[in-house]
Length: 489
Image (tube, rainbow, N blue to C red; front, top):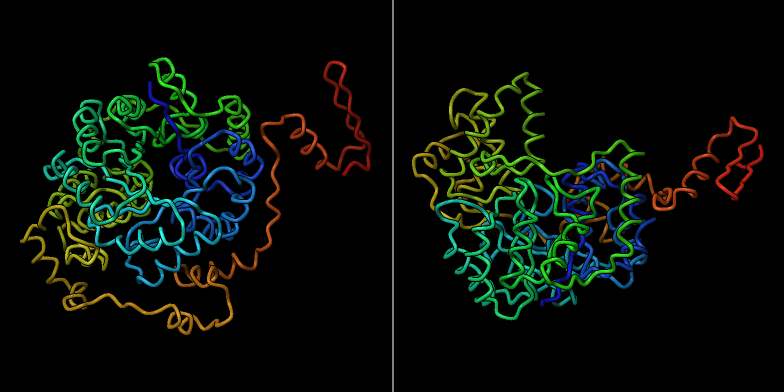
């Protein structure tokens, strides 16, 4: 039977889904050598959300994270994610910035990029794919899965044909970020895409939001998928991915040959269990099936953000009303896929509509840019009545004859006013608030030291040595004895 390979998502999508993207580089480094021995096709490390979390919350240099992990994992390609025209924000980014971003990803150690456009408007990413390939990066292009009258099997077949012709990717992926796939849909969709892509490597990336992702991944290999995206069990399930442990076990039972070193599973998972306990982080667990997910199609992490926005106004009881409004707006806006940036743009408009008591009384710049087509061509036409109402709003007037500015990197460098900084720092200063970048740069270098959670005795000793109030500590286990005197610190 077929050999199946795996992409590990623990260091990117796993903690993005379960730990609000707060896993630090220090958490990753102690286990990197074992991850490198696992035999993954790739380890997914950096999306633009991880860059944002590094700068905004952790005050880590995200480029340094890439460099450190690339050095620690020389045998395994590190993978990143590029989000079409918006990169780290919900707004539009100049082409020159995207081009430099890709080049710096390659220079710092990423050897594989998932480059996607949620509208499947391939003109948006054609140049990005070209630049990445010129840098020697393996390019994976996803078909982003969604449900609507537009997103039929025929739609995805046509988009796959256009993708192969226009982009010529190295690998093709079904990206089910919202966890909407069902086994029945896998049986119709996957074989049709496989016919189009032929012998190109075929991957699946599905979240467990409805609990069906493990079944869908197992079913997909019957129809030509040969790479599955997984996480280690502490950061699997829930809104995250299927666990590598259960996936390899089930694949072998079905007669497939997982191409992975299972001997390292236990110590790697033990390390992440240790972090979760030490830092008070949640563990992933299976979720109950919720049919409402198929109506609003909001990713799990974004629901938390919506609850926060409503709680600030003491209106958290109106969450279901907002989710219903999201379903309506998505239909009116031509069924955008509910992933970043469109999930946030639609979600914000839904909150405005509900809280203001009148639909489209106000809007955002990003919403206007979307309905005017600046993010790309929507899957279906915008409802004309909604478009007319939005374009009469004060927020829309400045965009009626707007063209996206396309400054060069040299012009942006002059605008930043720091002519001698590196390209890496320049990109951070272009894309993030100045005060956050200043704080991040001032925090360097970070120690990046963290206990090795898969070695409990060493963890114990390291933790004990920090407790200076004791004059003497002795550890006994069987014949093993270790004494630490008052000067052990």
